Length: 363
Image (cartoon, rainbow, N blue to C red; front, top):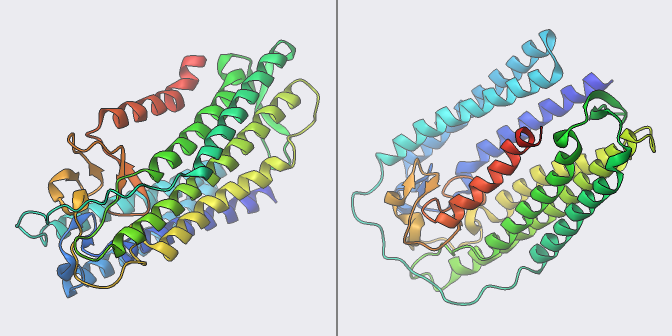
């Protein structure tokens, strides 16, 4: 039964990810084509449509290959290795086809300088939900650390580190700094990182059109607010899920409970559904940067989005003169870092240090 559930979940996740990949070119801002600003007229032309069709065919092909690889590995290895193999295959195909599409779009970009920038100085509304999520994340993470501190002396020599679908432990490791403190630390770090991102996104630079009487500004504000609220909600669910998992695993380790609380799988499924459903909703309802809310017309994009010189591979934005930490993506849904801002780079490095090197440093 557990294998069948994992198989259904894997196939479902791969199909949803594939669907989001297929959707990406169709929800981009007018004038952008696979991470390149080619102008509004070219992006709506026949060459752009052919490029989008080639993208769809390639993603569908890689999806079939990924599902096939999953089936082969699942028969010979573990469900987890099959899941990773299938997703990596799909991700590899996405990267390969994106680079090919980006290069083709780059050949269609105008040689002329980017349009003049336009900026609006109107204040942004306060992201109340993002600040609530940030405060809640700090409380949840601190509470998880405090609960661990209180009960650390009661822990046995072997601690549960993996739980089956029933919530009962099925793998153990010797007690160490890593096995004891990693989950409560993760509760604090992940919650604060997500909610902090929600706050920063709410104040991210507007990417507007010049001379469209403020219609793109209104669309951008609505998209930015919805994205911030989505990240704040994800932070709240993540903090709660990790808090319950941290406290529940300690209760199992000390013998106070036989299994994790039923709330853990419920919150896990909710978080997965929120991540997938929220991304899909933003794409279909708003489009990237509010593209689906913008009025039709030929008003050109401005600011960093229209300047191809500031983007590497259409994905990585670098402008030391731009004080922004987060800027709108050119391809996909959401926002990305300004890698020319030292604050953004330091923040990313600290996050990676805590997530990637944290377990090694604690063991």
